[in-house]
Image (cartoon, rainbow, N blue to C red; front, top):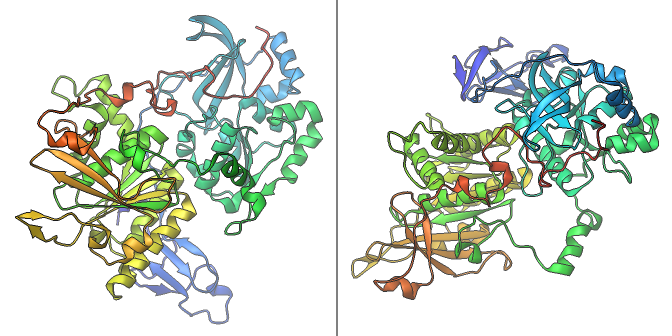
Length: 604
């Protein structure tokens, strides 16, 4: 066996277990037990895991080669301008950061062209190393303008210092990182850029995830503002609350401000005083007091939407739940799900995963997503253009496809989704269709019991990982009146009445081929603030790019003349797309959208 689930195996069967057997002694605990020959290890060769029923250890049967990054990044040249001017050394001194710390982290100074001022400026240069190799550099001028190296990889600052440590500390800013190193806490890394209020992009975590897999504790000392808390919550979701601890800076915004105000000893104590992420599965009033008070003042909040006029007025959602989408074959339910996926990605900043069994070959499904995003299919001249490359790069970086050649088991699929949460930060996933992705352990049960087990598995999984899911399911064969099949309702879905009882939301996709319109009907919306039960909205479907264009109402759609205009523009070019998804121009905008550590003006 050379690969498993897409990963190349380096050492096969590293514990020399009996190959092909489902049970064995445990290489961890059996040698110390009285019953040394007890076969307490359950082996799953398909997943590459062994689970001991005695000591509880979960063993990885093989070791794997590290995957190469899909992207090809440039690497800056290290110029070693570490002899800093007296003015800059003195300025860092006012921040209580010594010259020794600056030399340890190879902080440089030198001239650099800055796009914000459109001229060369003297800059501080924070160098990002991995395995001793320079990966990126952040340049900062005296007016707090900054940029990263264009087309260079984003990683954590000071990454090499946490490679072998069992604990690590994450801060939001190089100067915060230098502050902790100054007081003797070296296993500290900084995010390379600030966070937005609109979305959280942790591509630097994606590129460094292997450095966190061996950690027992991860201390989070991020900025005490809304944007910093957004990053904190996403890191907790990715790495797991059981290993995360929260550092409190009292009345200060960040680590350096705390260091300057209270001194090094107090800064060290913030780590000792860090608190575990609140206990899971138990909620007190204080845990949700802010949400409770906001509800009293403003009512229930609107849910997440896809940015499609008309549809957003009748349906929205929260995470930790799902929606079932049904419709007669050929009526376009999978295509409308693609519209939802692109919408959640662009409008909410969510990355997503598909387990779409019937959307094969995959390049045809990718063509549909690319056309929805770009507005057109490329011709031979434009297929190699920068504009089309941006479309393909965006799809590649934001959508992932779970694909098995040996059949689809729900638990195996969810294991891969869990890995994508950790490694890529996905926020939603699509299962299409329900009847092709089996919950094998419940196949012996009756229809209603099977469906109940299936939906409970999904519900528990999404609550644990703060995800939203879209489940596509076929209806039973619908009766015809005058040769026309009747519309399905929620109870028409194959799999039993448990769907209506257990799913919080349901949508019907219904296509009128004669009038060339598509109706989306809300079959169920559990919460009144999220949508409108029974609501119907109408669209024209663009055969060129697969987009849905709203029609004002059904009366208009019944006439031969009604106003609509198809959109062929690239959605990546629109100003309203979140900054998170703007095409990389080699700089991070310093326009107030991103928040960075507050520092006094640098004396250049």
